[in-house]
Amino acid sequence: MTGKESTAKVELRGVKKRFGPKMVLDGVDLAIQPGQSLVVIGGSGSGKSVMIKCVLGLLRPDAGEILVDGEPVTRLRGYAREANLRKFGMLFQGAALFDSLYVWENVAFGLIQGRGMQRSKARDIAM
Image (cartoon, rainbow, N blue to C red):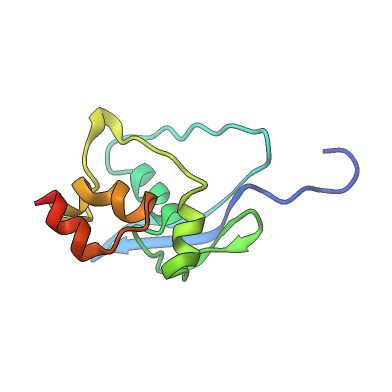
């Protein structure tokens, strides 16, 4: 990088996540600078999806920090979380559902996150 170092678009610092005795993310550090692309490759169960779910706030890491555009995002709620999510778009492999959400929440995801609809109204529509 030349001159002043720019703020990473996405940065993980010491991110850890475990499920019971299984350590899935063990101190992940990475920074994706503006204009860069990143490919994460690994075997099944190696933590690829868990890492992106932590970045999106679908899972909360057990330790570490996640920053988007230089701002910490792991504890965002409400409008601040929604504003952060608008920076992302993703499609799971094979167009799978978010396994951390109920089916109706998957159906209503765009209404709640994209349009800011109240959960109760979005649930009625999804059902």
